[in-house]
Image 1: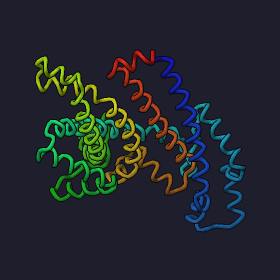
Image 2 (image 1 turned 120 degrees about the vertical axis):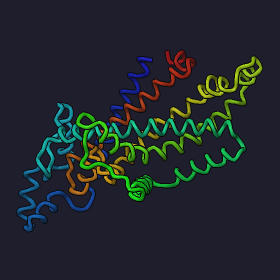
Image 3 (image 1 turned 180 degrees about the horizontal axis):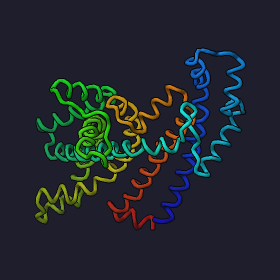
Image 4 (image 1 turned 120 degrees about the horizontal axis):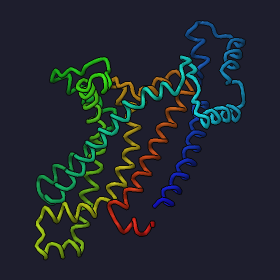
Length: 317
């Protein structure tokens, strides 16, 4: 297991390098840059000023040289400074990371609870009206984009007169206000996750319940609850855990829109503003942070297989 974890960690580092290179090049291919925006706001755009400003920011150097300078700073723990505000990027990422992690963890937990629970119930109620309703709901929530789920949730809260406290308060400052501010965006994020998990859990449960060991357990007199929760569900969890890891990556991308809609000062909101201002250093650091979180989650998912199925643990060791 240790060797397996080291191999996956090395692969994750290579993926992170590829992500860093891709985002570094991609944002510089977008028309317009931060220098044009800053000078346009100042009301003075001349070729001389553009050249002088780009030289001051180091944007006049070849892309390869810019990337090496930025990568060297990351290796030494320096993410650079915002090209727009001049603030250290590490401070901005640090302040925005906690709200995003809190939102993502709550959303994935709610999605897993609702999705796996609905999938088990749909398998138990196979062919009944309850099964049809759960399958229909999962299809609907899979089809609705995160943007619309966020807007529908916010509109629904407005219709019933519910007020989300503003401005944003951290959990350490005001736990109850923080919970009120995070629970509804987390719910909007969790619905798509729950829908995907529900469909897969139902399929996996139906497949497992037809296996020989389930029929043998039923013949031994195992109760229905013990049969489904103790035997079938545990053996159906491998594909569900795999999808859960994938959904966490999709969920992180959804935070960019959801945080903007609900005014949560997280990493997604920071990235949204950085893209609007073409703030290269902040964009690069934010995307790199997203990539790092996704790689860590996928590694944890891979390692969790051994906990769910001892056969995988023995095979790896």
